[in-house]
Length: 430
Image (cartoon, rainbow, N blue to C red):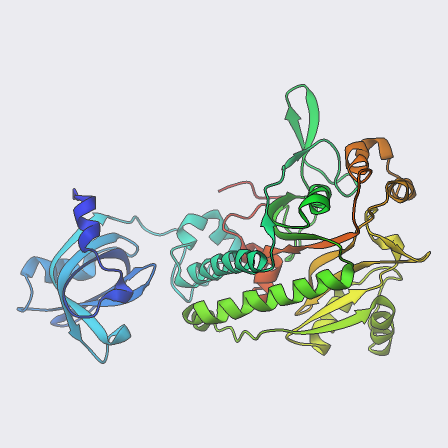
């Protein structure tokens, strides 16, 4: 069928806007069924579902004959009259005057119903089709709200959005888990963090934020790690770790509030009871004592996965800020607090770390000392160190995993559910 798309779009109604009178709609076939002299087609678009109802003798014969023979997920155009119906989804239905198949769907390789039993790896193989599912669309509608809410919050805070390079000459955080790329005749890497750049900017522009893609060549295969992910990044001058922890807490609360306001339908479809989180502050030492009381093993200078889960159990619907970490377990750029502690923190939400951050080192000599302590060469970070030689204020910031936050908000069992096209050690397509 050839469409005058301009003319069609002037007349087309999204399903949620179909109220009364004559309408033209287009969408995907959700399902069809026949009950004797009555046939039904459930049509979906991004806004919802509507029932198309044909009674034999009251619609054209060709429409009645074709209605239950159209394959699932085919794209169809329907023109007809809206009627009230207590039995139909949304309390209304369309009696068709005209139905045309725009694109016929072949037999489906996966189940795309709301109650799909297809396993995640198979669904990801056919992700373009998996995205036809209303529940999957609901996840990414919520993610879109999150992204917008983050920007709104940061602009209201006086932040300036910045764009930072994804190709770097050396590690941002130390370590060797980097993806190497060919950059003309030089060796370069995909960025594992925008940390060093946002620090430079905070020392001149005071408050900066970014939504940044990061790549980490870690050979893990867990339900909470990706090799390509997104971060909400924030950096602020004239601030210590407690100032930016407060910003992070209010940011997450704002994001959740916006999702509750804008995505009620999607949350209901997913069966999620989301609450605006409370906030709790604990030192690393206090957490270690609490874990010992609860029989949970923990490393002497890091939180174990079991410890994070226990914090989620003990403090549900709460962002738990764990601060005063051992200096030995934090990156070279985190400001020391005495000889053994640091001004770094982690944020644990629903039993998983969603963010880490802290006050940064803005003193060149101290940076060089900490780099050497971590087994790194100051010469590899010369431009970064030099940026603090010309009037650098104390500053602090954090990075928060977008997919981690979404996974925890929606109780998703696997972080790959929170990514349109996930990248892990085994998956490069689609």
